[in-house]
Image 1: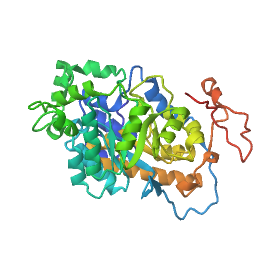
Image 2 (image 1 turned 135 degrees about the vertical axis):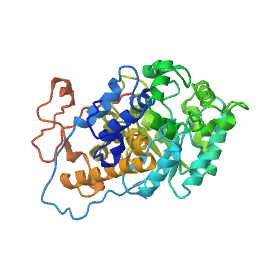
Image 3 (image 1 turned 90 degrees about the vertical axis):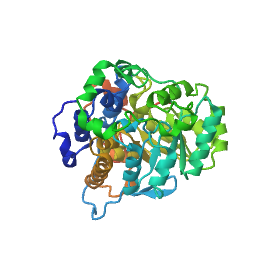
Image 4 (image 1 turned 30 degrees about the vertical axis):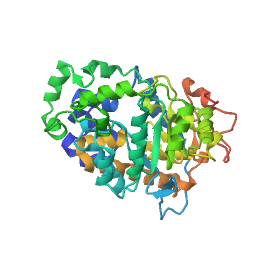
Length: 422
């Protein structure tokens, strides 16, 4: 990414998430920036997540009453200011001290849910104590140690987490080649990356002082005595991912968890139907931000057939590639109830902590309001597929998106032809 924006100390002047990202790339050492921004293998899926939004064009209406713009909606039965929740992201403490608490506070300020990761640096208990009235969701990586998995579920219930978000698409990690280049072993940087980190003293003073790389707060009680370092925690989680996670195991988790259940990692309609039959309350259509199976379809491209299959039975959230308020609007127009956004708020966090994450959420909300007004749909509830159409002059690569519908018809929209991906 070209560094063509204001220097990092002027993050308050950033006008877009991309500008915050550019500032973060300047402030962070290479290993932390790659962890935040990169994807798996050749990053085709990572990049296509953004291209998918760009393939759709708006069909705006005019001469409508725009005196009131309303972005409020409900997620899991509770009202929120914009149809967004902060996505679960791990190891955030390498970007900013007490990063998970900062993100939770930013979410509370903007009246949206915050999802805490199993591999967060701040623990469930610490976040719940810091933001007692915030909307807390907890993301679960089921572990080989069933007693630890059960304990995490019980801790989430004790922390009054509103929802359990079970991630299903990362039981085996994707080939993140940048990670292999950065570390000699889990959490031990190469000499080159260590020297590069030393060239970022402001980042080191904020993120590392006084104890070095932060450990994973949720996992401390499961680590051997005296082995609570970041390296020990990283080794533990890499060895504990439950590669035997199946629909039967997910059904057991449904029985153990009495609250709302969200299943994250869905890319095809048949898996979505399984989730509905299992008793989930919501699903997240996601390719893990392009960090798992490179060559997977963009999350947005998978959304319409899933909405058609289960949209009346489940709430559907869209994850991966959200960088603007207009992206949120496009996801809703294609049938999502809301979106999860991880990187967007992390870019803000990386350059300004809690205030930077606040700024990122403010930008997304302002952009969403602007999109609704210019589109002639002043309420998010008015967003539907009639708002969208593909360009009339499609490239050869995009020709498969055409349907038999006529683009000239005022009541028809050219839609992608999306089969069941199962």
